[in-house]
Amino acid sequence: MLDALTVAVSVTALALAAWCGFAAYRDQPTKDWHFIGMAVVSALALAQLVVGVVRLAGGGTADEGTAIFLAYLIGAVCAVPAAGFLSLAERTRWGSATVAAGAVVLAVLEVRLHDIWAA
Amino acid sequence: MAGRGLAKGPGLLLVWLYGVMSVGAVSRSVLQIATEFGRAPLAYALSALAAVVYVFITYTLVRGGETARRAALVCCAAELVGVLTVGTWTLADPGAFPDATVWSDYGYGYVFIPVLLPVTGILWLRKSRRPSPA
Image 1 (cartoon, helix red, strand yellow):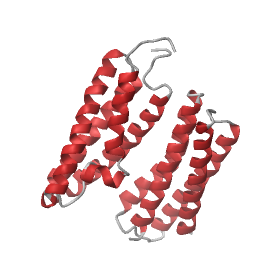
Image 2 (tube, chains in turn red, green):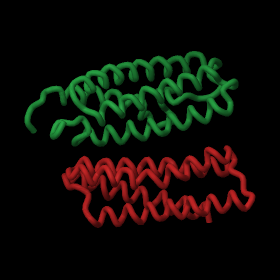
Image 3 (cartoon, chains in turn green, yellow):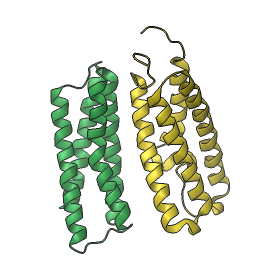
Image 4 (cartoon, chains in turn orange, brown):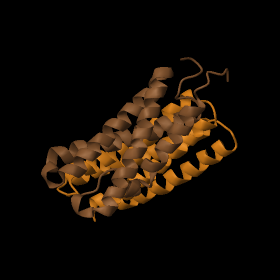
């Protein structure tokens, strides 16, 4: 379940990065559809946080430590919403570029999360 | 501040990346220093230094203004020197670093963002010097 969510978050995050990167390339700000995409990716990351906490509560142990695992889970939930919030105030292509960068950061966090849970 | 903050346009992307590096470096060094400082004191102290620099640059970029711009410029230069020094140091004398720092191997563990960021930052800060109406 955790692995499936990690893959799902990574793939959707990279798709979001490509989509918003394309918007930046076309000199467009983030639009409603982009925000729906961000919401989907964030919802998946939130589900991952819940599943991760449940796994820890159920006696599971993260390979590199509970604190690091939780920190990365929380960081993963915050990454895209934070970038999206910034893009609300920056109605230019650079808002889109920031969201794309946020999604790439999330994808990197997912790779690390995978290592942290089971090396 | 209106219209010529440092966090406008390309500057926003820069603020975002510095913000991410700040959160990453701060949480990393807090955790390492709190739990296992004795294992690699030099590496963890350097990570903490990197964290302070990142937080300060993020703050100056958000705050904006000429003084902040100059301060950020100095810090970006210091950051670049730091990355290059620590990067070279870790390659030349790996024995001194039982664990990695944020700036090890020129930021290899962070997709080389630590070495690219100050260069981009310096270019952006130099460009936004003129208070031209735009």
